Amino acid sequence: MTTRTIAIFGGGVAGLSAAHELAERSGQGADFEIHVYEKRRDQLGGKARSIHVPHSAKDGRDPLPGEHGFRFFPGFYKHLPDTMARIPSIKGSVYDNLVVADRMEIARIGAPPITISARFPHTLSDLVTDIEALFSNTGMLPGEPGFFAERLWQVLTSCQDRRMAEYEKITWWDYLDADNHSEAFRNLLVDGLSRSLLANDPVHASVRTVGDTNIQLILGMVSPIRPTDRLLDGPTTKVWIAPWRAHLEKLGVQFHHETAALQFGIADGLCTGVEVISGQNRSLVEADAYVFALPVERMARVLATSKVRPDDPLKGDPALPGVLAVAPNVRWMNGIQFFLYKDVPIVHGHLLFADTPWSLTGISEAQFWSDEHLDHAGDGTVNGIISACISDWDTPGILFGKKAVDCTREQIAQEVWAQIKASVNVEGKVLLEDDNVHSHFLDPDLVQHPDGTIHLSDAEPLFVNFTDSWANRPPAVLQTRNLMLASDYVQTFTDVACMEAANEAARRAVNGVLALFGSSAAPCELWPLHEPALFAPFRWHDQKRFDEGLPWDGHLL
Ligand SMILES: Cc1cc2nc3c(=O)[nH]c(=O)nc-3n(C[C@H](O)[C@H](O)[C@H](O)COP(=O)(O)OP(=O)(O)OC[C@H]3O[C@@H](n4cnc5c(N)ncnc54)[C@H](O)[C@@H]3O)c2cc1C
Image (tube, rainbow, N blue to C red):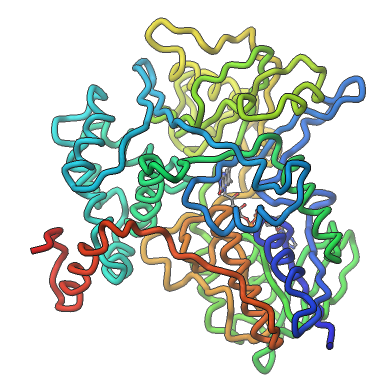
């Protein structure tokens, strides 16, 4: 059997998933020698990695576990959990390290929280009733929750062709007529819910992406059989990424750290090699197939550098210019952790700090973790972690009246803590106290300028599906026969930048490699988003109307 060398660039969730799925299929009609090239010195996992808090380890313990941003694994994820179930861990598999969170709380400044749990909606009126019950007494105008439910219902009962042809072109903001609704409606339903899964900015993100994702989340929340939300039972790198690396090494995958892809070329429909840099040394990686598992802004940088080559890849493959077109569609989302002496669980699930000016989301993590992780970390006095993500960098905060980008790192920490406290310490309850904070850790990607402001340009932003961007987003398998793309911006069923999309894109890329070399291994499975069978008659009816050029009407008769 001929051995095929496969070079994968990027050791994030997409790159590791591609290596994993490929390594398991080696030896079935084709042998694969797999190399992963990662620009970071010693870390894998990309945006999902844990980040050790420097100088925090005392008396032989582990460093405190910081992170780029906390991780959640919603119930609708299928691809990623399927791969996780094949990574051995002391619990069996890493999938067994996932624990279910049974609540989601929408915390509000100076008002009681809304805790979500409901029954499965069968009709529009069920959905309206559920949403009205959830959002009553929230300061919204009468009819606004019902209006939101109707808009969601429209997406739910529209056929796929209409979603692609019409909803891809409309922003979530316009679709919900946000300018003409109350501030509470905008904060809770337009902005809050769309940002609950990643950095979806409703002003730019399409109805197709936010609508589909909200439906998945809401159906997850109310489904009797699917957990809404799952989390790992310890720090991400410790319980997932490290066992993953060990497993991949056992399968023969070779890792090359501090090695970054710089440029490549395409000639006669084939990638001709990738120039990499390692320290000061440049060299050429030649392989039988190449998988670029880089985030969109990095892939765009590689393409821009490669443009000067005689075998310019942008001329060689029709899908690649689209990468440059969508590369600016990124938003900042970065994390901060507050380490607490005493654990404060707040709620058994995620927190959406709906009316915080910096669009914060968060979780109180320790309640989900096995005891040993914090007992064996730092100086041994930390027993709780509030981990939060900041998604809005351009709205003034409540403590300093400044945008996050204009704050120093220390001011960001103080401001986030103030916004969280204002949302959690309500109605006379004091859950979070200043003297319970042991220390905090802000994502080190946020570099402070000498003038004190934050420099974001080299941090790791997150891709957002802007309206009308689908056509520019490339598929995983390109016309260039030995070149594949795998990352969260690639066209996938998942269609929102997250770890599930990264894994799905990697599976598609691996299927391209298997087909290229005539492997007899079973291709990686792919699953479309779950569309409840209950609404199939509505979607079928809408398909007929769409085919006849008629608008959606939401009726079966
Ligand atoms: C704050 C935050 C919180 C998030 N929370 C969640 C969540 O809860 N659930 C969820 O599903 N998703 C979440 N996401 C999204 C998710 O992290 C990403 O969509 C996913 O990790 C992307 O994986 P990736 O492998 O495609 O890219 P990345 O994670 O970006 O990995 C790419 C890798 O490539 C490396 N690299 C970059 N350039 C080069 C180069 N030139 N050569 C070689 N290597 C290179 C990088 O160092 C990195 O290791 C979150 C994102 C952020 C920012």
